[in-house]
Length: 279
Ligand code: C2E
Ligand code: CA
Ligand code: CA
Ligand code: CA
Image (cartoon, rainbow, N blue to C red; front, side):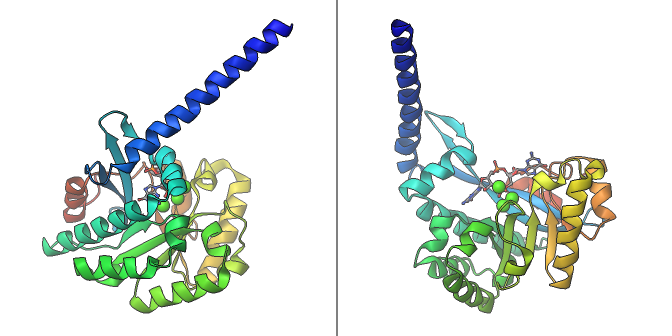
């Protein structure tokens, strides 16, 4: 028994070592990734309740590394958040998304706002406002065409600073959305203290909404109160016709998800903007 205990312990150790080795590898490779031009953006459309109308796009970060291949943002963003690299990476995302959107505009395409995900560390940086301003100025993009996606936890941690910062961003004309809404601890009563435009209802509430009575109760409360606060509500992660039909008959304003389109590269989204959705 003693022997086995020992073995288990060493297996455990080896697993832990492998885990931290993988993390170290990610960390090491991330450090040179911006310089090596390994990041790119995909864009996923949001659509209005009327079919075919794209109301906005969300920029989603992709990383392809020579040694590691494609790495999901779910894996590398927490590490970049930890080592601080998310700040320059997030700056790159914002600049690239603004420049790309300005380019679509110059091509004469129907322009819709581009949404950029902001990480907690980035948002807490004293330079965050200046970074937004710089991305707008260097691209020449109209501020109303930039939307920042924040999460509940980020805005609740220092309410006074957040209100001041969001008010300054709103004064610029930038839009603000709360991402993954419903998964955090904030209530709509708290949310109304912030100058925001949009609530993105987390996809955990959208999944099978057509026969999930609990999900229906939660989302209809969110939709109704959002309407009273004049907020736009977006349902995330719509994957099926049944989910989309249910949402069309509810008080939801916009939808996003694989049912309409996966995130696609800038060439494909330009075609969608010039034409209409394939569906
Ligand atoms: P998110 O902001 O909630 O983005 C939505 C994620 O769900 C994306 O995954 C998207 O591809 C995926 N998705 C969209 N529609 C559907 C659907 O119908 N079904 C399912 N199952 N998934 C769907 P992705 O691109 O892997 O990004 C994951 C997360 O990584 C994002 O979640 C966001 O938190 C973070 N992220 C992505 N890009 C950035 C970025 O530029 N900066 C920061 N800070 N975070 C980012
Ligand atoms: Ca998002
Ligand atoms: Ca989300
Ligand atoms: Ca998320």
